[in-house]
Length: 192
Image (cartoon, rainbow, N blue to C red; front, side, top):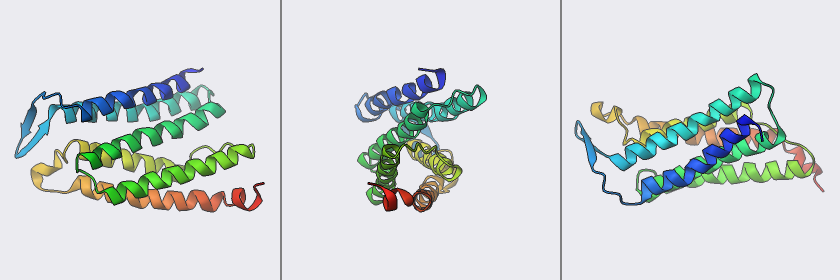
């Protein structure tokens, strides 16, 4: 397994740590910033999520720079993104920081695209993520990070950045899903 794939696997391995930090009541206290009280566990969870998300850029950079792109990496990288984002979104619903319908839309798109990838893989095609899919992923990461941080520092000026970022993520999720299926509709028309 090459370095980019090891980094991707590390991203997957950070997910359980993120879940434990966010969902187990550790009672580490909180930080008061303006009128916002941010539990330290949420700050630590946000940092874990941000570090895990940053590995998406790192593994892609190394894979392209050193010509280490593999079919395993093309499969694992988007899967790791989907697992990380889905886990974080479910946590946000559990903590009442994100509307469940938005999370259902995002996760449903991820399952649908993964299903299409499996159909394509069965036909011998491995499809790497396109630019719209990458933008979708980064809008989701920004929105989730802002929600995990309780909209700080934007809450200090009463600007709903986290909520707006989540709307942008939902829009890009739908758009990229539509684009993905439109570009790969042959998989349904010609599959056996």
